[in-house]
Length: 311
Image (cartoon, rainbow, N blue to C red; front, side, top):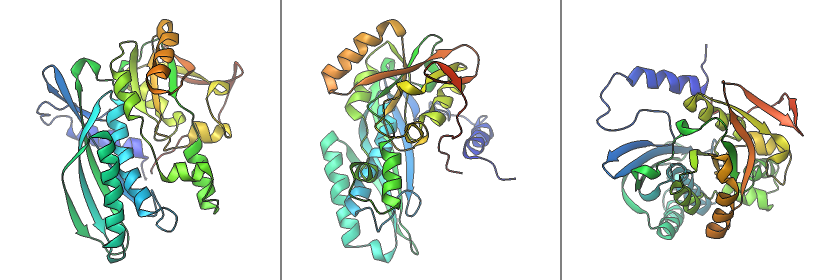
């Protein structure tokens, strides 16, 4: 019987649990962490595959170049770290060699330059007919600033940056040919909360944090499992300009999902807005137990839809 994505990852983590980790933290967070004394390195990797993560007839080479970097450094930012370097591997069919690859690299460089991120290695190879892109992202932060999924505390507020659902709505727009809408463009050109993630890493009232890549219906469960807690989410509080289904289940928003000491929320939200211009919204709270409860205007409700999974 075919296993789900997260069950498969869990099996892999169990398989390798007995091997020496040589200073690296085991599987379970946005990045692995390598202790360097007062500082730590965080390292993550993500893959983009043509016809799964992007369509070449809709997304330009520049848009794919931007997205390839952003989805990876988003994991670094979600740990409270500053992205400092990447490794890039490309598998390109003949049709993507030359002009497409050059446009891809120009945008990858432009976005790397914007954040001061070095490209320090990688690989290139040919493929039969589709593009595959793999990036390893490396970040650095003071060890005390690293945020993990496992740090949520009962009573914390569950919060998100920005607004949710635009990328999911954009995916639908793109698939139905509405490629010029704001949502469609946002989906093709992902943006990570780089400044916000590093800034939030310095704040002790922020406990658990991760990026929203699969929709909060999936991602809040990662925090719950790693922190051994439950959560209650109020649907009417979720910040979105679109149908709530896009906001709750849609992947690739790359906003930040975090838990915050409830008495510090107002100050934190004010300070984040002042420092970055990004709003912070409380959408629920962390509870004892292991149950996820959804509320609609305070009334418990059952969702008829789930977050994204790759399998």
